[in-house]
Length: 112
Length: 114
Figure 1 (cartoon, each protein chain N blue to C red):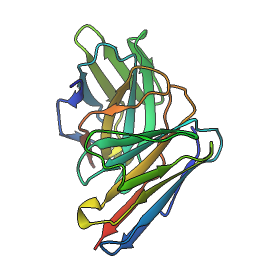
Figure 2: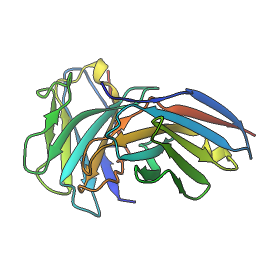
Figure 3: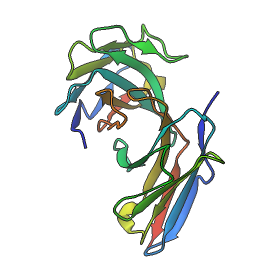
Figure 4: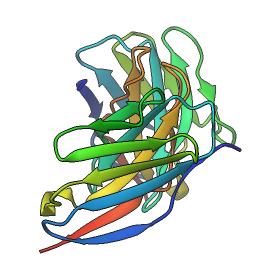
């Protein structure tokens, strides 16, 4: 079935460097994408979202890029900090109020 | 973001007993409630979707008689794990939705069945 997947299961990053987390999706009907951050023992925390009519969106220290041609989504974290260590999930949906489909997750480890 | 609460945050129960998890959307009306389950080191898997006042729709492989969902009001939904077994031990997370695109997750409930 349609799914969202991730390229890298674990990403080690030096503190202060930029992080890039990648995600591939296969449902061409998806029109909304979200990145979540999940710390151990907690529920996923909304980071940033992007609709399919956009190819880039920026937040505080984070940028999401969407390439619909190759069905690819990425999350860039600038100046990665120890507090950024967590598991990051991408998710997709194709209608307001519809369910989210999650990718497998990428663990980001920030080295001091 | 939306304010969502879950209770309890963690629970330990004996095999064969039932556990009820409450999810409340504190600052908006949730016309739809999604319940997810997450096993250790795995991604989130949707269990069921419920609309206020109607029966829940369960994902393939999820037993509706085992995971009872009640969505009686726009601010409260409950998930009851009946006759729990150790394999039901997981992290259960609710996601209330007001029909918009954005979805905010509850803090989750850690269930351990001994």
